[in-house]
Image (cartoon, rainbow, N blue to C red; front, side):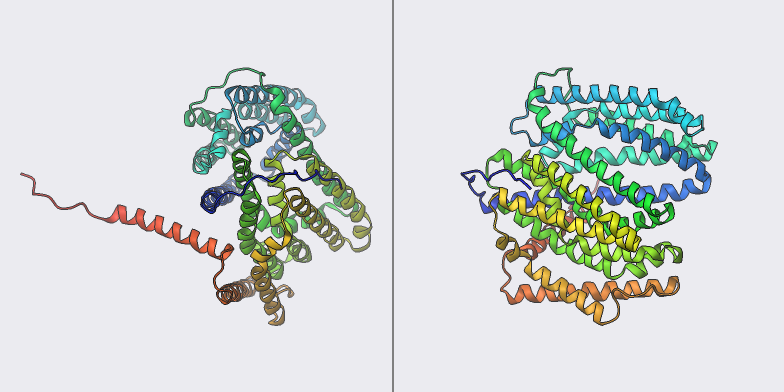
Length: 528
């Protein structure tokens, strides 16, 4: 697979102080981004619990069908111009105006296509209600496209707290409106009204939270279009791959087994979706900042990757080990076929950290051609493996094929990143070998103790006890081994030291905030 040649001259390394500052800002941004994911999950879970008691399944299915249709068309036209603004070295007014204009044109065209397709789409599914729902979602797409692109500065400036505020209030309003309308009318329009409310409030908030006022202009289209077109090609290739895998597995097996595979995949990739994915968004901003400063990115990449490994690697192996009680506890006995899916795919996530962060690095430096061809080649390999393995072993075969391709894709991205940016694998290994050893000890301990990779315990109570005991003992073993190795090595600089320093700063900040709120003002003379 061809890779872009390394530059003849490497930029200067940043000073240790600059690297520490960037790591601190990255950690803070990751905290807000991961926090947003957690809050979104919690709000979605609560709203689903409430709405499921008021609405009927047909209401959810109707809206889900319309959302899938509108989002599929919207994604086809998404050029990612905001990312281009984040990575631009000198983002001038013309670039922001052009980005807004491109988004506005895209939104108008996409909304028109969705609206014109509403009636045929509803006729195909023989449900006239779909037409009105699709028309409403076309309006939501248009509102999203008219957002103030000035909020891209939040990522450029690591103001992820502002991004959190920008996203959380429309989400809260969405839940409140949906639940209120459902209580009054018990109609699928409660879900639609919630979506429209969130879109309207978010677009409005972008103008309230940032002073930039866009104008219609395409003056800087040439500077944005190259990056945007490759971003679009990469996203399209990934979408085709994801949809193709679903269609292939569903076609060779049946909808029930496809549901089991989808559920197992979602559980297995929790560390990637809830930790590494949000971190990748912040890493994009970090690497873009390094690029704008003209300094070497290698130290920042290695430090972020090593620090993430310390958390993500044991989480991936841990989920694989407790797949049986986890599936039994969360979904019940009818989903037991998902256990081998979780065991295989979770273990295959061991390189997800380097793969995701390497992809963010290529994106930040606008080196997108290798990403595109990597997706194309990996997709062809995945389809080629899925057919014989699913035919031979069914669901486990699908998991094996997917796991093999995941590992290969992550390894290729890592190798390309190390080659392109002149980094040495030994430098990364020096930072993560203690994490690798501690994870290996944890996995061996759980396997030999009969706690990991076991059959599903009978019943809810047994599964809960098994999961709690295995989680506590596994985490304890990992932490103890990692700490002992770090102390034995003389407490070197690395992810352990970075983690302790970050924890100290967080604790200090919380203490000062609490102290500032609880300290009483100095007593003065009594009032007369």
